[in-house]
Amino acid sequence: MIGKLIRSILITLGISALVSLASQVAGYSFWWTFLVVTVVQFGIWNLVQYILEWRTSVNMRAMEAKMLIELNRQTLEIPCIHCKTVNTVAMRFDQDNEFQCTDCDKTNSMYIDIEVAARTEIIDKPHFTLR
Ligand SMILES: [Zn+2]
Image (cartoon, rainbow, N blue to C red; front, side, top):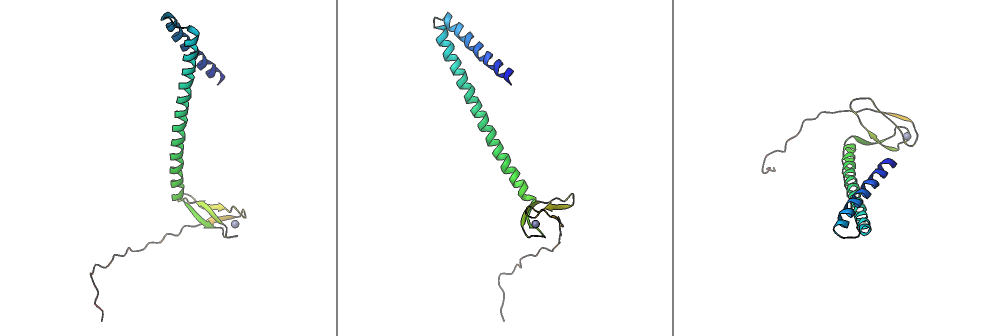
């Protein structure tokens, strides 16, 4: 970490020195050019860091929203059998479902009961006759 920091500072100062030497050949002040180029490099560095952090936070928020949607698909609001406190529980089809109540700490078992029903169709008649 410290080694990386020292390396990047040395690179920054090296670039400043090279640009300053070139500007000295062109007749400008070495130290003024050195100062300006160093400050500009730190400014650019901060801008790049800001953009990277902003992009990371946008990606993180998108991922969190996605995770929340996935979590909502597989969780249930279910009351504890002992104290009736409603718990949010993840439901799985590949293992036994148990949860520990957040209020009374007792273990509950969850069973999934699946029913099958025939789908009904809407009667396709424009009107009925009354007698
Ligand atoms: Zn409970």
